[in-house]
Image 1 (tube, rainbow, N blue to C red):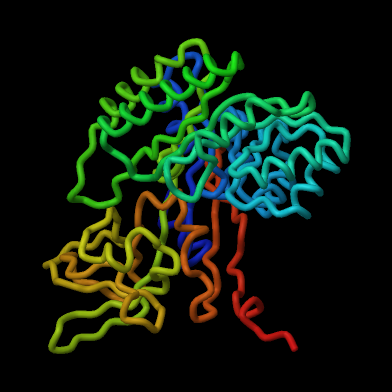
Image 2: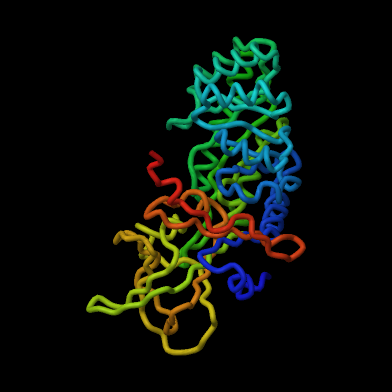
Length: 386
C-alpha cells in the first residue's frame, strides 16, 4: 500500500493518485471470472492516464475521440489493439487516421453516415477496414436493426464486418435486465445470420457494470460476474469482448484534498477544501447527502463533530458531503476520497473558476510514485486571446 502521507507531503493537494498495482490486480480478478472466449476491453474515456500501464493486461482499447487516439498513439499503444469508436467521427480525423495508419484494429459504425465515410476513406486510401456495427439500445448511439441488416447485406470486399457492438448504459446492477439484454442480442444475431448467411464472429458487449461509491450501498459482485459469464455462454462459438466501463479502473484511484478554511454560523460547521465538484464528479451536487468512502489524515483521536464539506468553487452546489461526523478538523487536514480511478479525472467541470487542474501521480508496480501531470493552469484556456 502506498505511503499516502509521504506522497501528499511530496506532491501536495489537490491530487489524484492512481495505484497501478491495485489496477493490475483488479484486471486479473475480472479476467479470472470469465470464460476463455471472453476478453476485457478498456474504455480510455474512463481514465486517459493509465492505458500504457495496462496495455498487456487488456485485449483492446475503446477510443471515442481523436484526442484519445492521439494520447494512446503518443504513448506507443499498439494500434492493433485500438477500436476507434464514438458517436461523432469527424471527416478530418477519420481521414487522418486511415491515411496515416494501416494497422488500426477496428472502427465502429454508429450511423449510415459514418459507414459511408469509412467506405469512402477505405477506397480513397486503398485500405481494408475491419468494422464493428453498433446496434442501438434506443438512444443516440448506434444504428437500428434495419440499418444493421442493410450494412451486412451490401458491404464491399474492402470492408470486413467483424461483429456487433452493444452498450445500453452505466451503473446497471440488475441481473434480470442484463439477462434480458443478452437474450435479445443473441436472438437478433441469430436472426441476422440466418437471414443473410453472414457470420458475426465477435460480440462486444458493455453491461454497464456498477461501482458503488457510497457507504449505504451493497453489491454481490461475485454473483454479478458469475451470472454475467453464464449469460454470455450463449455466444460460446464467438469471441466475446466485455467493456466494463468504470468497473475496471474506479478502485485504483484516490483523490486527496486539504482543509483550507473553516467557519461556523447558525446553520452549522462549514469546511472549505482545495478541491470540489470540479474534481469529484460522483460525490458532489445531488450526491452530497450520501457518504463516500474516504480516509482522513492525520489519524488523530478526539470527539466527533458534524461538518459540511464544501469545495473551492464559488457556487452553492459545490458540496462534497453534507452533515458528516468526523473527529474535530484542523486546517491542513487531508481527506482521501476513494474509488476515483474512473471518470473524475476527466469528467469534472474543471474549467469553472479557472482553477488549476490537480496533479496526477501514478503509483507504479515498482512501488514508486511518479508525477505524470503537474498542476495545470486553466486560465490559459479561459483567456480571450485577442
